[in-house]
Amino acid sequence: MVGCFILLVIFYFCSCYLLAFFVSLKPDLRMSTLAVAQFTPERLVYPEAKTNRLDSIDLVRGFVMVVMALDHVRHAFHYDAFYYEPTDLAHTNTILFFTRWITHFCAPVFVFLAGISAYLYGINKTRRELAHYLFTRGLWLIFAELFIVGLGQTYNPSYPYFNLQVIWVIGVSMIVLAALIYLKRSWLLTIAIVLIAGHNVLDNVHVGGHGVSAFFWSLLHEPANFRVGRFTVFITYPVLPWIGIMAIGYYLGFLFSNHFDPEKRIRTLVVLGFTATAAFYFLRVFNIYGDPSAWAAQKDISFSLLSLLNTTKYPPSLLYTLMTLGPALIFLAIAEIPLNAFSKKLVVFGRVPFFYYIVHIFLIHLLAIAGAAISGYHWSDMILKTRMNMTPALKGYGFNLLTVYLLWIGFIFVMYPCCKWYYGYKRANMSSRRWLSYI
Image (cartoon, rainbow, N blue to C red; front, side, top):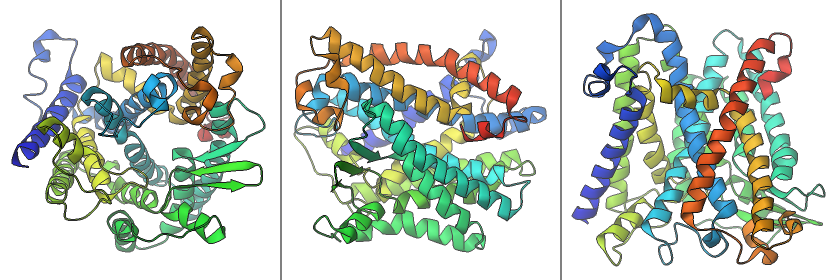
């Protein structure tokens, strides 16, 4: 146990350092070796504080969106995706496990940043105006999940199934947040903490069958599949903890307002990040609380480490949330360093998140149709009636993990000019076309 704990600490600190390194690299070679070592709040460029502050949010969001595509490409192209989950310790290997594990950061960070963005959007708005925006945008996102993302996942206009995933849960969370913003900040924080830290108390509560009560309980807390007439509904993202994650993001949004001292913001983010990560270590190592699946010693120390990190995403357990948002808070602090050539590219993705998400879903599926045809399957096998990895006709389809990574890199290179063009178009036309604020 002690050895696994030490490896986990080393892994986290190495990850944070590598993130700092990539973000702080400068074209000027004289700065390249000193950027990380000399990073302190006092070295911020205060005349650029407003720009850097907004860029830091877009940078972190862009990073997780690029990583998110890795999981979606893996799911559409990896041979083993049809047989077992990458986090199944009985079948996986270390590289495959971490290929999936790194993408665990995406959904909670994206939902958390959506909460921060909601706060910043409302700074110059009345509560009524902000509530109206959150409510209408939430409805739009639910519609988009069902009928736009759903079409991209299946390429089947008959909509044989609906998969309630991250866009759906962001929409629901925004609708709930539209009401929560009227509460005192202390009450909002309390509700957020209770939802994030307390929902695991409900892990042993189950509602059997496929009736209305089971359906609504699944929407709240327990993933399940339901047959509704000719449709199948996959409830992948129950809403309770995600509402808490967005609410805590909204609560902390004041850290990014113009009047907040940048030095204090960085210190606060670092303290919160390391506190969350330390809480994860303590609760996880001793199997105290916070995840329905306890870790256990495995066949060797590396797989024991995997067991430690193998927390529950559906729904996100307290330990899953601490494990992902802890380093993300530290990364947010690090991201205030002025942008370099590499990080400027990531910011482009973070500025057009919804556009990126929709286009990448359709494009990955289109490439999967081509991949199936090249592999000897009929292209129509990719016009889905259920999830891709549950389609009998596609058993045996797929490529090795190296091919998945090459496809992912190529996909990112294709997406960059598309996102850059759309950001320019959106920026030039936002004032005359308000609907662009929803895409």
